[in-house]
Amino acid sequence: MNKILTIILALLFFGSLSAKANEELTIEKQLVGIVGAISGTVKTETRELKTGDKIYLNETIVAGSGSGTQILLLDQSTFTIGEDSEVVMDTFIFDPATNDGKIVASVKQGSLKVISGLISKKNPDSLTVEVPEGTLGSRGTEFQTIVSKGRTDTLLIGPGKNNTLGMRPGAVLVGNNFGSTLLDNPYSITSMSKGKAPGQARKITKNQLKKFNKKMKSLRVAKLSPDSTKAERKAIKKELKKELKALGFEKEEIKSIIKQNIKKDKKKKVAIKTERAEKKKKAKKKKKAKAENKKGKKKKAVKKKGSKKKKAVKKKASKKKKAVKKKATKKKKVVKKKAAKKKKVVKKKPKKKKKVVKKKPKKKKKIQKKKRTAKKKAKKKKRKKKK
Image (cartoon, rainbow, N blue to C red; front, side):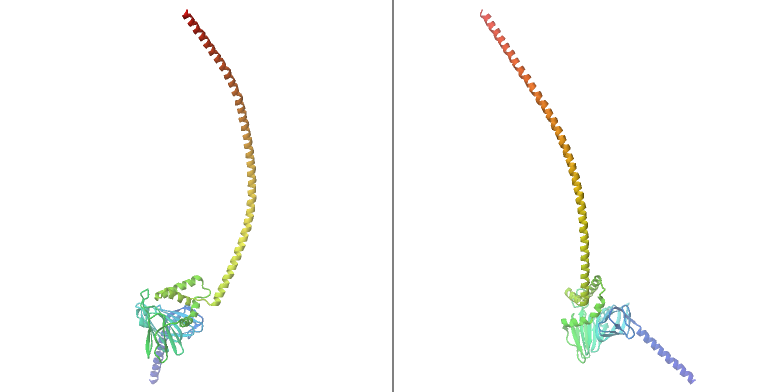
């Protein structure tokens, strides 16, 4: 009986162990998000990550030097892990129907940039980031933290109090057992050391901002690979502009941030410039060759046209000469005919004049005779009357 009882107890014990092991496996395999972008070598305890890989709860994500990754969480939050970083997703609870949930992540070293999603929109206090010196409580915003030896620097990015889209102003509560500091103005920063309360909020300097941006440089290089086209760069710029507008930044701030975030390596710039110069030279050579070919063709065409024109001019000249000769002959004939007619007319006119001259004296003589006879008759009558 004792043996049977011990066997039963052993089976029950092993069964409970297997059940616990299954529970742990289910917890470990809880999906948290997906890798959106990656640069360099980023690993977990068991695998090397690639774009599109799934991220599970309690996985430690380690990014080496010159490496980085961007994780898109299920509630639309974005975790961007910079170089030389180690981040763990400790808690992730999310109900897509109500957008209720809770996110807790811990940064052991390196840099993490957080853009809050639906969970923080529903409840701003539901997203916290644990660092060695204390905790960072997000209030529905975008912020970045850098964990170095014995110190944590936290930067609030936005949105501001009077953002143009009417969004809830973002804030980050930086605190530990010794005190807390609220960051509620965009580009304000605070530092927290071990055994001390966080420092007062102050505006970030240019050198400090360069330090924050440098941590994310590798990931920007991943987004803007050397093979990326102008259209892809424009699309990324548009996305960044939309994100920054949504966070309530002004135009000038957006321009400066895009300039800092979208940069090309000097080597790549030089390579691209040399390629463009070579392409331009080739294009110029081709243009010159085409122009020379066109000139040769034009000369040939001009020669052909010149010969054709000369022939045409000769033909026209011969035709004109013939036409002129014909006209001259016609004019000569017409002139001769006119001259002949004029001669005939001139010859006829004098004859008519002679006849008229001859007739006139005869008429005068007859009139004189008549007058004489009349006078004689009159004299005779007078004589008779006197008698």
